[in-house]
Image (cartoon, rainbow, N blue to C red; front, side, top):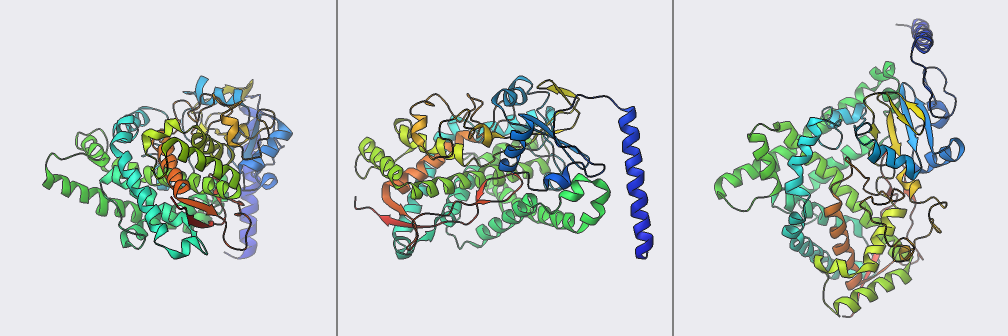
Length: 502
């Protein structure tokens, strides 16, 4: 096909789509839609607002159009909610109506169109997956069974840092060692196994393929094919890469972890069960499929390991940049626990300032600032407006927690606010100004694991080291990394961990 013919073909398609959309609007339902920028045919608001619909850009749009606004991204409707009242409507009051998940062309590949728990629509499959995952992962019993392992992994981090001369002089990228800690914490729960070191080949294979999955899903490169289906053929190469990563990743989970655990369980008999044993039993009884088992492992790798790691990294950066807060936290740990007594999980409830530091990190540096997107399967009402079926609903949880109309000096890192005027606010979603784990039916159940793991790890680091910026720097760079869904630090921080004389 020569260029002239191709140009005529594309023009013909464009005209046909404009006519079809116009006829559809004339014949279709008349909705009272939320305000927003005026869309243009085919592209909607995409050319006006661009790809990077992060929490800060959406905040600026909310200041212009209001607490509920509509963006038309090609053929997709995107509704942005930016007030506690409307967030409560979406997450709680109308939790069933808005309880489904919207996906996209890439997430459809990585979850096989919602065969997991996190990205499936609201319905029987989600209820079944949530029930099956709760007992082995998300109960207080699980915390008590695994807390000593978390404390052991934190102690190993402390030991490794003390044995590394570079850590106390030029500094180390602490995130790399904490990544091993998080994999070990979660893989001990899932498979009753751990990785011996950062050089472990299996750990590095797992880490690399998870990072590739994250890069592909967070990228803006595929939006044009997701927003405008007629352009999807041009996305074929990108989607083929996604399919290859998905297949290699699920094979890695199956061959090296799920099947290996099955073999061990068959030889050990009736020993102590780990999480995957419960999941496999559900598969053997016919409740879920083999693919569902692998997608549960997929969810834990992404939703539990990476998000908790991001929060740890942000908390350490803020403590390095606020030495007075770090000193105050260290004083609490020393005075409550005693010199040289290392923090354990039961101690956390007696350490209010440590809890406040974690809460403030989750407020200012929320790992998933727009939460996992919601969707209404049917036409719905929200804030006095009509919301067409299958709209993508984003709750700007970061803005809820950083709006100066609701918070005192929200742009400052001030843990004391959670001991004073905001003392009753909890991460569990009891206040719709503060939703780091969401709220309602689709809230993140991992809160029960994430909070103690972060507290133990952060507490041990502050007890044993003075955390400082690298030589020649007065602070750590906290520039945010662009991405579709997460709030990560752009440059992984080099931190000097100077041992304390205990």
